[in-house]
Image (tube, rainbow over all chains, first blue to last red; front, side, top):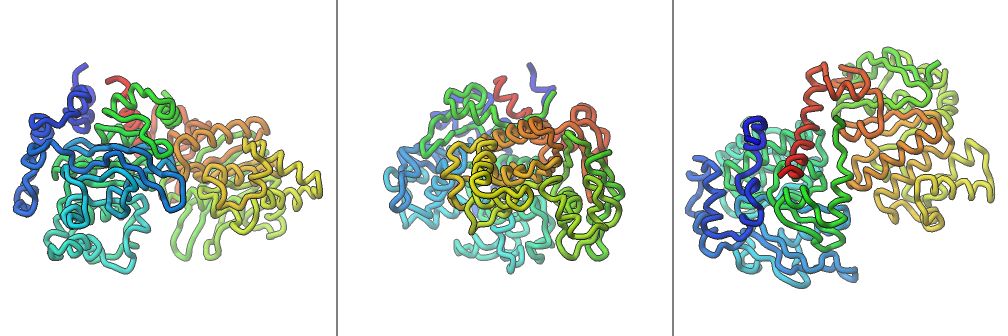
Length: 310
Length: 265
C-alpha cells in the first residue's frame, strides 16, 4: 500500500517509526542524523540562543547517548512497598516515548524521578549519558520541561498568562523577555494578547496550550507530558495532539508521554513502554508493542480501548 | 407512556441560556445517549430532569418523570421519584459518596428510606447490592470508607447505591471518564449487563463517542445547549448529518485509525 490514501499517516509517523523499530533503536550517529533530517529545522530554532544550546547533532553523535534515561531505577516511598523495580527507559532524540499503565502502576513516580523531584533508591537517572547530579539540575531543567494533566490546577489563577509562561525563563535566570513569551504563545496557536489575560478566561484546551507554551518557552529538548489530553474533550484532544506533533517537528522536541489512551499513544509516539505494578513488562517500537503485544497486560489494555463500530 | 418526557426544556442562569429548548423522550428499557462537549448543556439537562439544578439556575418547559412534573412539582413529589424511578451516577464517585460514611451504610440508606428494610434483611440487601456490581469481598467493602477504595471500586459502590432501589431509569453522567481504560471497560460492561437484567432505561452522558457506542442505541448530539442531531448511534456514526457530529466522528476515527495502523505495520 502506498502512503497516498492516508496522508495523515505520513505526517504523523516519523520515518523511524515506519521503518523496523529494532533498527532505529541503537542510536548510531547515522540514526540520530536521520530524524533530524526528517524534521524541517525551523528558523526559530536556529535563531534561538544557539550558543547556550549545545548543537543537537553534536550532542546526539558524540556518544549516541539518550537525552534522558532511567537505568535500572527502583524507588520506594518511605515505609512502602517498591513503587518501581528495575526500570530502564531511554528517551532518544526524535523518538517520542509513551509510558503506558494504570493508576498505581508507577508512571507518575517515574516521572517525578525523571523531573529530578525525587532521587531513585537504586539505579540512576542520566542526562546526556551522564548521571543527573544536583549541580547539573539547572542545565537539566532547561532541557527537560513538563506538562500536566489538569489544565485547571496547573496554572496559577492569580497570575497573568504572560507571567505564567515566563516562569521557566525567570527560574532559569534567562530573563523574562516578552518577545520569547510571545513566540511561545504563537507556537501553540494563541494570540499575543493572551499574555495580558488571566487563566479563568480560557477553556480547558486553551489552558493546556498555555501550559505547553510555558513548557517550551526555554526551548527544551524533552517534554515530559503527564496525561496531557485525558482531561480534554475528544475534539480538543485531537487538536492538542496535532499541536504536540507539530511542535516535535518544528522545535526539535522529543516527548515522553504518560498516557493510558492508546489511540493518542499510537498517533504521537514511536516507542512504547508498558508499566505494570512498578515493572516494565514490555517495551519497543509502538507498532510492535501495540500491533503485536506479547504481554497479557498489554493485550488487556488494547482490548479495553473503546472504538467506533463499523 | 414514556418514562421520561422532556419537552422544550430551557435552563437559564440570569440572562444566559445554558440549555435551549430541547425535547426528547425515554421509554422503559431505552438506551439513550446525550453526547456533547463540556459546556454543551448535557449535564445540566440531567440535573434538570431529576430536579437537582443548583440554586441560581431556573428551568422552564416541561419535564415529566413517570408522570411527575419535575419543574413545577413540589419538592416532596420530586423527592419521591428520585431513587425508585430515577437515579444518577456521576463522573467522580468521590463527590457522590460521603467521605465520612462507610460504603455499606451509604448503600443501606436508600434501602432503608425507600424500601423500609431493617436489620438482617437490610444487611443482606446491602451485600446483595455489592455482589451485583461484582464486588466480591463484600464484608471488607461494606466496612470501608470511600478513601480506602480504588476508583473503580468507588464507582461500583456508587452504581450499587444508585441501583439499590431498582430505579426504572439510570442516568449516568460521564461515569467512566475518571477511570483507567481497563476499569472503564469493566464498568461499561457492568452497566450494560445490569440495565439489560433489570430492564432499566439508561441515559448515558458523555463527550466520548466510542464509549457511548458501547452501551447506547439512540443518540442526541448536543452543542451550545441545543440538540443538533438525533438518531440511532449506528446511523449517526455511519452518516453524520450535522457538521459537529461529523467532527466528533472524525476525531474518534483519528485515534482508531492510529491504532489500526500499528496492527497493520
